[in-house]
Image (cartoon, rainbow, N blue to C red; front, side):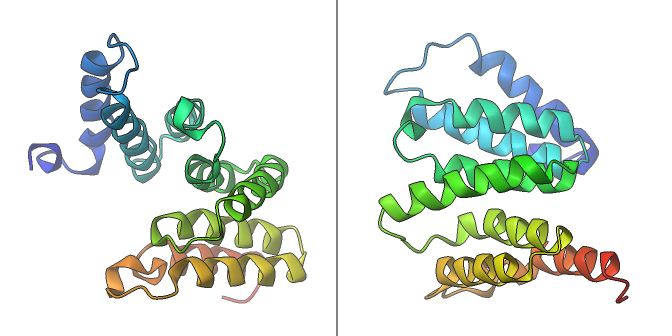
Amino acid sequence: SRGNAGGVASGPATVRARGVLMDPLPLSAATAYPFNDYLLMGCEVSLAAGELAGAREYAERLAALPCYHDYAHPALARRLQVDLLSGDLTGAVRRGNGFLDSWERAGRHRAPTLAVGTCSLAVVHGLLGDDSELEAWRAVTEHLLADTTTPSDRPGVGWAPTLDAWLLLHRHRP
């Protein structure tokens, strides 16, 4: 795709160019999905490129969309990644509680796309030395991944090994 032409480094510029087209549009039923996708991809691409401030901005804008008013956990999952990678452990714990409340009210559904957020929160608790919360969030992550049919849906393909390695290094267990 055209977005891959310059690699990860060009990703944030591509997202910003999309924003030039999207941001002037009013939020409506017709634009809700494109806005959601634009902000979600903005967060993901910014994280991949190491632009943590941009990732935080996209995650905050994503969470502010009206579709997340009653059930915030899909947007909070993205913010949990940002919190971990930017070192906002206190914010991650607070938002993790909000994620859990929202996800439980929604029926504790299985959703592999949310697992990277809960995996991030498990590492946050590990970094804080709270192994019981670390294990509780790993269990939530496994629940989200239950019935996953393709290996690429599991965080072990990407984020989970990196996050686990970070925690092991923090614990002086290279």
